Length: 242
Length: 392
Image (cartoon, rainbow over all chains, first blue to last red):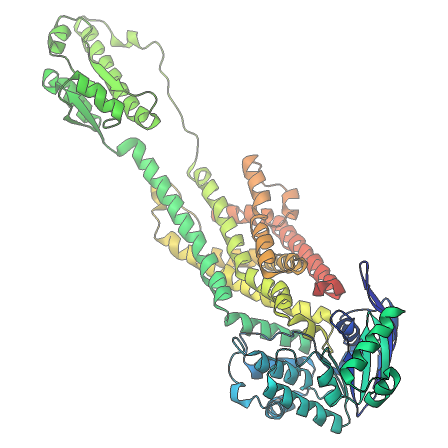
């Protein structure tokens, strides 16, 4: 369960996030939707504690990301945007490195790494060095790495970027599996269809602010648009006009 | 502790598999120093031999007119060769640089000598040609010496002491000692060790900071439930291991190279056996922490791999500065110098290699102050890693 309350963040003169609040409950998929530069990534980076908010805070399963960041990090698995692997290590070694850093019991690491490799269908290239991996292969390994310690909360920043249809589909299946296991999944995207196909709740962000935070039906209703893309556009315009 | 060890072993494994890092740690640093050293030593040997023993060719026109003079010149290791056809040819040959110097002995040289008229010879040289000037000077000196010899013989024949012609006798005394002569070369040597040491960890320092950021692997790493202090400590320690390995290799390669160098010809007998190799390793070991933390710190500030490379090549040169200043000012080792890393190691190492008694206090200060600076920089790295600006 992730609760975000009134986050502000500026970079120099750019006020990137201006009071974003929303919550992502367990057992549901929450989508963070918005155009490029809306502040999605910044919000997520605050959640996985690499950025400190100027104002406001967020709580992950009771741990505050500002005052108790180490505990908050223990409860999440994060896939940052454009996450890179270590090219000289094999996929399995990349995943095992994170398993070790997450302090999983030594005796369980091999099994756990093998499990997640099977789950994400990367057995075929698991023992090859990651140098020269395709975008889809890299994303899968990054995801395996983020999920190896079986976190309750999963934060994915634009995970489908650069993936082909098949890879996107298998990622979608995985996210649904996580939901069925009662996990809290929060992911960002700028593609409306993708969010609509997966999410229970959608939080549309534009210009550093939350435009609408509702279910798909609720968004249709409140914007008065039947087509989701039109709903998206008019929600963004609502913020722009303020 | 487990985080630290995990990061440490991962960085070691990762970089052992990286050919560039391995090449710079195990080949570039350790080989570059000894090769450079061998080159400079050989050049000094060549030059030392050049001044006294090498022969020079002297083209002479009309050598048949002065057989005694020719024998005298040959006794001075000057080889007489056939000159150009005539005087015009001689001037032309010197002007075009075909010969550096040409000696012309006129037909009446013998007659003039017998009549005690100053016998005329002509020496063609090009004063503007600095290379040829050396040869011309040697020929001129030889002619003056012959002149002196003949004058002495003439005076003796008339019952006059030839010493009358030498009111002053100038004796030049060279006070440089063999160890003093080798001091400059030894100074170079200690810098090579520091260079090899830094080179060994340079790519690690870049890879674990700027490289990790550029690759996009830093952000997921920082989102893990670990403290950043442990991450950076593991990275610095892995860099230290590479630097120490590189240092050891360069000491050993020097040990091997010195065995094959004709240093006795230069009057140098450096004390560089295996015990000194071991002692030098432990003397320079504190510098490893300083080097690793300094390089990591500098690389952390940079935005990209390339920028880090540029800045770290400046760091590679930095340790020479104190050594250079002291060498130029020819200062003797003093207590204060021992507080300066790189300089203190250099001075102690030079004493070691010269086989001079070592000052225990100096060594203690050198080790402690270098470790202190290393610890301060490591702490600064850990501080820097807590900043969010780190992600760039």
